[in-house]
Length: 109
Length: 114
Image 1 (tube, rainbow over the protein chains, first blue to last red):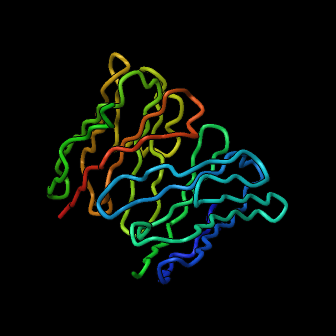
Image 2: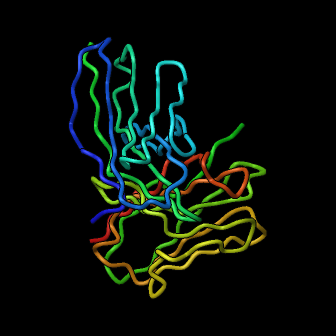
Image 3: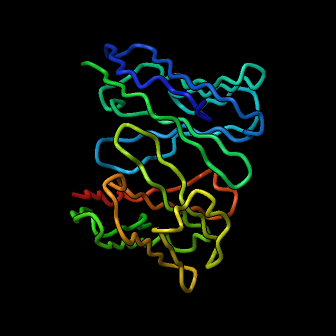
């Protein structure tokens, strides 16, 4: 069983839609939860991170962590064509970082 | 502020050859990470340095991979000898402190082993 599971998609939505991206995990030791955006042939770019359970909002992006269910989500409101990218969840335990496989998102104008 | 620099951007080698990648982190960042990203997968952490010391290298295949960060700034990652399954993008990242929640990634080096 992988440490972090993420549906690879692809996910295609119309411009302006609300997007929901999710990851599940098995390791109860994970304390920090991150979301990265990766454009084609570029390095990942951090969108936001949260510590432990709860919600965090930054502009059009909201991250949720439910440690009891071992489930994290990233919501994108009013999605734009420029949001088209691969979204990676990542988690930290100790000095180790574990990434999901990424979900490919396309926002259609 | 300049980002994380990596070179070369692309490399094609034959199996059993050796190859080296270079990374220059953001100025002042104490922690440097090397990741391997195989096509269709998320990045896998290979090694983490804090200044010039190794924090974690538990997932580095030490029989063929080596890395160093002399003087606590630039770093090199070497593969010798390369195998077909080493074909991947090698990403370097840096963070200001040691906690690593905010990492800045370079563009990566795309390696193809034939």
